[in-house]
Image (tube, rainbow, N blue to C red; front, top):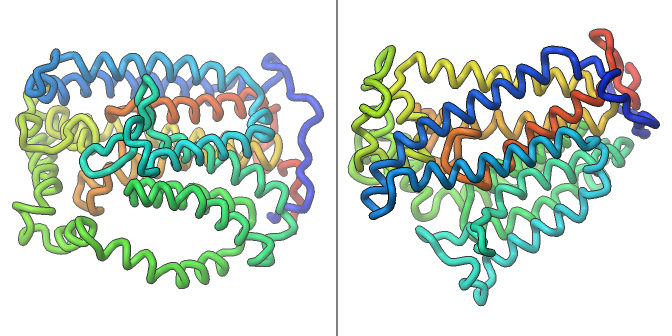
Length: 398
């Protein structure tokens, strides 16, 4: 099935009462799985962060209460995103991308340290009364912009210069300030999200392979420098780097191994007491595995699978190509970060510092994830009943 050069958008979105998915099971299950993950995350965040907060001379509920405020704001944003027609995001694609780019540039300018201080060797947070992480919002902006432009360039994907190259130019403008923070992991996620969206729109895999070969030396140079090189060496030989770059993964595996089938009990985990780094954020999956065991980890996986499967189902039934690409992008946003986070915790990937969606501490990531869920609900609400295999408007069979 190949997209044609026009994007047929319904002249008027169906009313909620006419929407097949509006009264179907998908929105209810999607929203229910989101609330379960969010609630489970808040409970475990308190367990993971209470000791850390006390060690910093803060109340034991400090991180929990901050996350609750982010969850409240995120749920409001989810409701708003779910109620507005998803087509409203198209005219906002360029303004959102420009706003995010300005915020990213502010992070790396030498004279903006007052609002973008260096924390743990990186400048990733913009403090404007409320600390925000622009790179998280860049994920959302890149998905929306890529989906918007991909619809317009349906007839150009056979040409590298007219098809994929313009996307690379704009993505590059976003990725450069992210890399300068530095934040290679987030830059990788943004690039993959953009690539998956444009590939779903019809970009040729041969062009991706060709550009991958061209960019391989740059990627190897980035991975072979500083702490990234140490992490890769530790990933290859964990036993030989237990006291250095391999320490995080080693402690993560201890936590997961200690959990067994049913876990050691809520609040009873030991690795969070200064052994497991970032137990409330980068390694909260491992902390959950220790306290809830295989059963708790299985619950997480099932809930994420439910969100991903429903997200792909919504994408398949979307009324138009933009809706499909947008739904795929929002689903990939959640799925990719969840897989990478859990992969790091299991020692299958080098440490990346990525949050576990809806669970890890981090209000910017939480807000972006809840907006993504809201967009999926909006697409579902505006999808009329359709038979399986229904062709999207703007598509023909080859």
